[in-house]
Length: 78
Image (cartoon, rainbow, N blue to C red):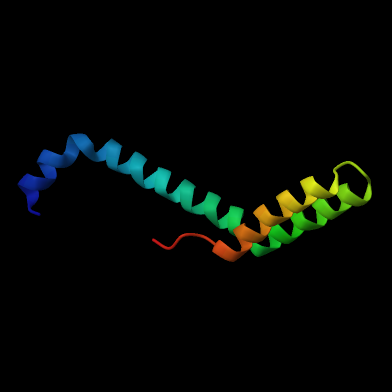
């Protein structure tokens, strides 16, 4: 794209910058959400809740399945 094209797209620069920032934020959030260490910490905490009697077996199983699904799926590839 030449100089003229760049000049014509200049008013859209803030929007392109905002879109880039949003993509970076989403990528980092997904990386943290699917991080195996984070999932392991959550599984450990879930086990503590079960042992302390704060949740029942059914709730434990449901939440454990969700965490294991996260671990299995991992972040989506772009």
